[in-house]
Image (cartoon, rainbow over all chains, first blue to last red; front, side, top):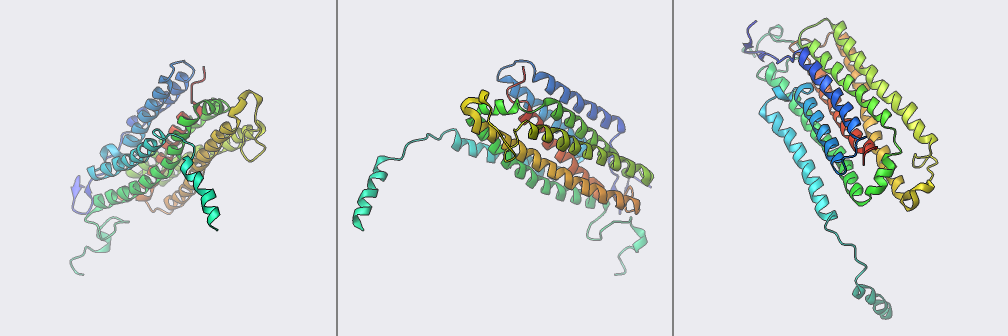
Length: 120
Length: 226
């Protein structure tokens, strides 16, 4: 059977077992590393390192286990859109949360209540 | 009708609306990814809430995080990564046309690791949390050393239980999907040309793995353990 026939299209890219095993050991090492780093005082960098390792692990899983390395551009852009929307959600929520100043009710509004009650 | 190929002329599982098997595979993967994007935003809502509250109550989140046992979280991460490997190998067995027994072996092993994850979580970790009185709604008790942080520590534990609970729910759904896959494999539904249910279920399984990778880093390791 040829690599490309009319009814099958291009053959499936089969990832070698060796690659799967390498990714697996990298993920295991990443977990061990992120756990070990948590016991070292790096100040604010602890969070940065933990997230960097998590993102690296995620990338490995997506590219190899989920076969995105061999996927079409269309699939890739859909995935990127997903993360982009997540970024929008986080960024816009924080732009509100981080710039909000808690104030007591403006006095003018409270002052209205006796006025309103006097009307009825 | 006469220009359509005879039914025996194309691989089993081939749907006639597609040009060829390659296009069909890409369409099913793309469709699954669109679903996974909604899942990213589904979990993303919780992660966003987590980020906001962590910024507002960082000290309480550190205190809450230190109530969790890293050994449970780390062990479960190893277990879940192992299950991802066996899932990938199950799909590979189908791609390379191995005997169905081999596909079923890897699927059962994936289910074993998935069940091990849930077993460790429910019988060790959540039981430990219950005994320690840090399970909100089930005898949660403030500790004197938390001082005024008590209510926010409880809120962290709510985040922890809802996020890991939602993740566990996805794992249970995944185990159900794997059961169906084992039955389908046993009934000779898959071939090197057609194995889309395995492929897209694999995408789901790996996605759940990725969520846990972040939950481990964000819930168990806040503020370090030194």
